[in-house]
Image 1: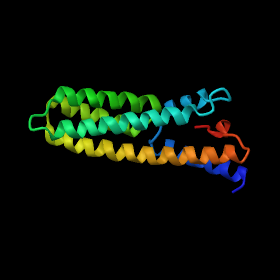
Image 2: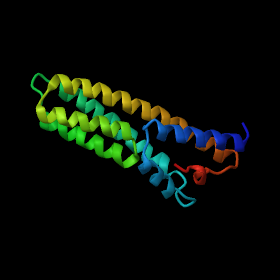
Image 3: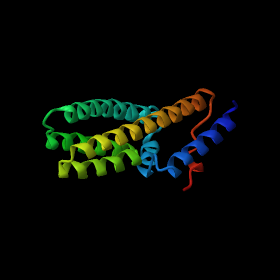
Image 4: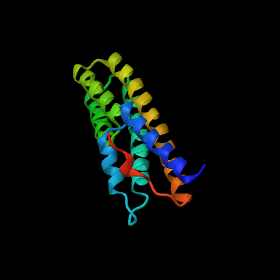
Length: 154
């Protein structure tokens, strides 16, 4: 695929992530921090987000599988995940965490289990989409092109 076509694909794909509410403007802010001096900034931030999220989802699964659920601990994990999601712009993950925290306050184990499934679903969706976006960016750069940030007008 030629560079111009890859750039068009990147713009449309990125716009779709915002239209679907998968990403919000915080992600754009991260992209704007990336430059020649730190060309892998977004990849590094995304990788940290993926690592932290995987760990937190594992911790949440274990905590909710306990005979007696420690809702304060569950809430602390959800709070961390909400913060990580918010800082990278993973809007739907963040929103699912907000609902999850409400059920932690109510100490509703069944609703927390449902929320955990929703959070996992939203997380794996954003992970898949971000990985695809990053691969496309890497292909554009490898082909000698640049990421057309200026074409993202919302």
